[in-house]
Amino acid sequence: MKKYLMSAGIFALSPWAQADLVADSHANLGLRNFYFNNDFRDQAGSLGQSKTEEWAQAFMLDFKSGYTEGPVGVGLDVLGLMGVTLDSGEGRHRGSSMIPADGSGAARQWSRLGITPKLKVAKTELRYGTLQPKLPVLTYNDGRLLPQTFEGGQITSTDLEGLTLTGGRLDRATGRGSSDRTGLAVAGGTRESDQFLFAGGDYQLTKQLTGQYYFAKLEDYYDQHFVGLTHTYPISPGQSLRTDLRYFRTVADGANNTAAGRASGYRVGGYTEDGDGKIDNYTWSAALTYSVQGHALMAGYQQVSDASNFVQPNQGSLSGKGAGGGSLYLYTDRMLASFNRAGERTAFAQYGYDFAAVGIPGLKFSLMYLKGDDIRTTGGEDASEWERDLGLDYVIQDGALKGLGLAWRQGLLHSQIDHKQEQNRLIVSYTLALF
Image: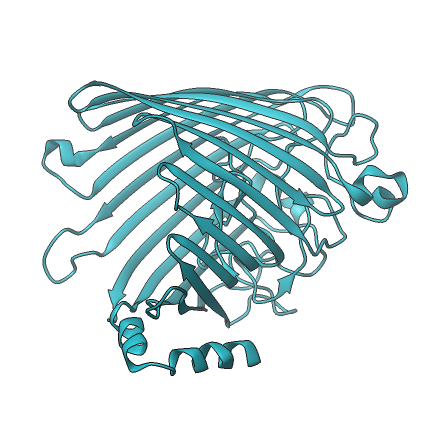
């Protein structure tokens, strides 16, 4: 609190600085109505229920201030999130897949507040507080009613032309279905890490070619290197071919690199080469996307090495925290599965169409199919899985309801090592500009 009062004191130093701060400020209220249905009837015996079915309303206040004038600009961002349960009857709530559990079922409402002071010098910005990183080594999850958030500091610089540099340190996360802050972990880990370090950059080599390198360290779990390359080849007006290459190398760090540390809970879940929970992985993928006249056809392939699953921060294994719902920077991180298991080889394809090409702006359709094979299992036999996802989106373009978004998501998973599931999501969203 003292830190925030000091920032407020700086704002009050000059009426000119204060005017600039206010003039560049803006606030939006996001409204999201979300119906979630996950059907796993053929697995009801092992799960104890036949499906998850819930309906809720979100209110998301997003305030972003301008900056004070002078060589060092000062500002403040505020993110207020609240969820209200509309329906989650007995036997239809499971864990915290969308709505937090209150001990006897689904919570009636939940909320959180994030305050983020910020400084800016030229084109370099420092933010400290509530963050929503969207980087190759860490991507916040926004696949349910409320988004996942992290706590820490991040610095971003675009002072050098064509180069974006990013670095920071995070120590806490709040899951998409939770109001509780937790430490950090990986899927299968039961001990909390209090430090995630990251640094890297994106460099635009040419107008069509961008290279990326990032490094991340989740203390006591892993070190991770990422190299990426994207290229867009303009074939003709309205026609292009995009290439996306990604490579990750992830190795054990700290406690995960010792038998005692792994035994205490600093371990990764799933198959590992020696059955000891040690992280040792490389994952690469290649995807080509051909776009023409509203059509977009993508085809790709991903390979995960044999020694352990691919990992990035995921707090879902922390007992009783409701912190699940991590995202992975993989094309294969989809509605129901992530296709990131040890040894998994995945072929995937997606077709998308933007109906603006035929005079219906705001309407979009997508269909994706993924097939993963050669998954290593503790039983010694390789397994496979496949998933099919559908998406339909429409944003009203004019009239009294202009900006109202309607979305339908439908996914089907058949897996030899996971629960077979069919999932539907219906989402109505609207953003109201307050000022």
